[in-house]
Length: 497
Image (cartoon, rainbow, N blue to C red; front, top):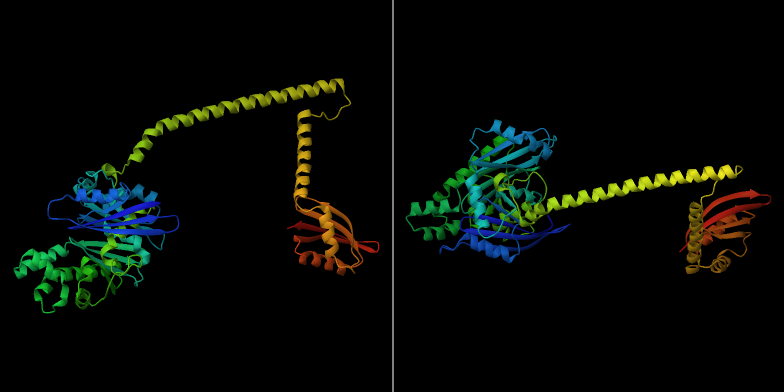
């Protein structure tokens, strides 16, 4: 999709926007916007509406549902065409899922495989969660084009990761922690956990007896104080979730995972990378995307991925704007309103075309009939006439001939004259050559043909070389040469520069 597009990452008390501009050849990162939700009750809708309308964007938006999905499934297909998968997708999902789906909505992200098939990574949410996310925007007169789930949007950044695959991208957000498994084809598995920063802060407050504000300050300091056993206990659930998820991914993919990339607000906490590294015995590093830079990669990863993922018009993307939540913009409503008049106009144009076509066929048939009648009448009076000249055809041919001759004369007058050509030839042809020219004829605006004679092929070759080296002609081609009596006749075609 060409033009500006915004990715919106709703994560607890934080809202992060990323504005990009897609062109035909490259994508430009314009700006980031970081919004803290205040405690004074100011609505998220007003905050978002202000910033989005400031960017003059009301529809070209991709947002992630802030809650965790009810269920995730994987459906494997022996083919990869999105149209075929759409035809059998619901049937396969009914067979694979035991959940009641009346109050739920699902969509899928398509991942190709080497054998020509594809896996559909199915994600299912409660309908009310999609409706609540949509309501945040619609109350402010905004209609996002894409509602998705941020771990799947990371597929848009798959080519930016230089880490050896498979690897897991671990994004620790305010509300939840998401695990995304990448292999050589991109995203293959996704898992979500409630072990976000808010739960860690609440756990620290519970264990230490401190108020939530002080507990938050302690957690944000990270592991600078290595003797803080309470902080280690507060992170225990997260570390347990990381171990459990890595084991599940390794068992499911039947491959060992040695690399973990850390993202989210907690990624830059002092000492956290070392703590996770020691706890899971894996190579843990902080995410780095060249377009974002070292300082912003971890924090704005999701919003940047959402902007790229949402603005990609390709098929097989996870998007919950379907069924009763189908995306419709004012432009599309206008298009629908104009559809019937446009169809009527096309029908009218078609009728006029058919009518004119019928008239042309009728008139052409009448002309042929009259010509045949004239020819019969002439031959009855003049039986010796073999060919009847038709005046219109004859005059048209004559006009074409005259026009061609005029074009040739104009081209010659506007370019080199025969005198110019002869003068140049006299200076170009070697003086001691046995070559003589019998005919010089223009065959086009800048093309001419030389006919001549010589006593030897060597002299002809020298003349040809001299013409090539003169710089006066763009092309020199000796088209024929043959013996006649004691002379060698030749012909050279030339194109003037």
